[in-house]
Amino acid sequence: MRKLISYFLYMGIVIIILILFNVGIIVGINLFTDEEKYFLSISKISDGIQKEDESYNIYDNVFEEIDRLNAFVIIIDEKGDVVWEYNKPDDIPQYFSLADVAGFSRWYLKDYPVYTWRRDKELMVIGLPKNSMWKYTLKFGTSALTMIFSVLPYIVIADLIIVLVIPLWLTGKRVKLKERHRSEWIAGVSHDIRTPLSIVMGNTERGSIVEKQCFKIRDLVNNLNTENKLESGMGKWNKAKIQFVPFLRELVCDYANICNDSYSFNLDIESGLEKTVIIGDESLVKRMIDNLISNSVNHNEAGCNIDIFLKKYSNNRIQLSIIDNGKGVSGQGLKQINGKLKSEYLPEHGIGLRVVKRIAKKYKYRIMFKSEEGKSFESDIIMKYVKVYNIKGGTS
Image (tube, rainbow, N blue to C red; front, side):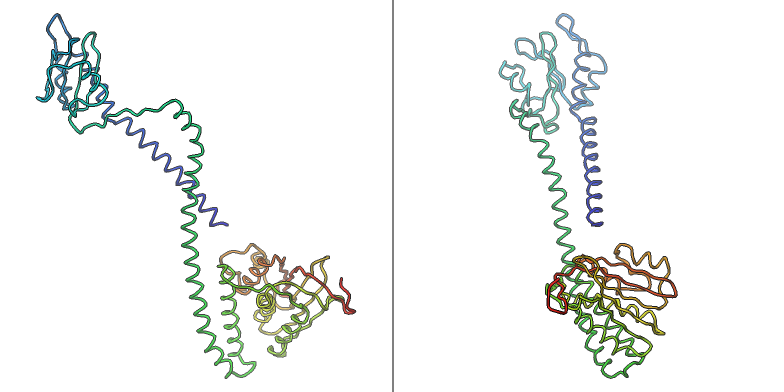
């Protein structure tokens, strides 16, 4: 979710910058356009050419202005004859009909972009160099303009959708490909570790330090694989009914058989919950509970008592509590453990509790941790069940 919010935030900033940039370009073009300079020069040149009787008085700066524009100027009288000229090219005629004037007054004269200026009964024409100006008029009918303005908001919305969705889609594809490659790599490494680890464990003395470290490595590999699948969404998990109490008893017995005498295990099932059924993937639920029990074992190397309680929490929920009388965690550590699931490891408890929280999130379990530093550590999971069969065979 945070990545998505960041994406839209950055995209919004990019759009704002893009709009400001485009507006700046348009304003800049409007300020520095040659057309505006040419337009201002026409009136200046016309004012500098004064007609007295049949002769023309030219101000000194007129020729300088025309040369600055690399232009030519002609004045046409009401009969169509050129009566005054400066820098007129050879291919420009000395006479123009009304049709000629109507043609070049809007676009080009012999491929020269020209502008006209009315002077009483005369017409002054200033021509610019060929290929120096694109000069055409765009026309829109009233109905066309009305339609454009009516659909403009939808066009803007469509543009925004394109700007937002296409990058998001491309980013999603890239992220998925990256996640798939990462998942495949982790799965491959995990598989390569399991084989030599099994050989080492098979030739290690039971209860030795080496065996304990092998168990830790095995749990680490399993947790790494599980978290990777949960985070990437690439795992295939079964959705089956689990007879929870026999499942729980077997898991606790496995730990009692593996751990030495410095650890004691007590399982307490509330009356009426013997045949509780939950829905989920057995391997995931086992990984969750296994991590909570191993958390108590691994962080109390001198040994401790571990009590597992199962009791009814509400009409359709049960509570599983795993409590040890070990060294617990500090107040700050407990606050971080109970905080929202983040990318970094949980303090002192590594990937194990991260996986527990991910599995709880997947099944919408409520999980809470309690601790008194130097005295105890407690994990409480509120789980939803589908049926509870009492010992006599009835359904509650």
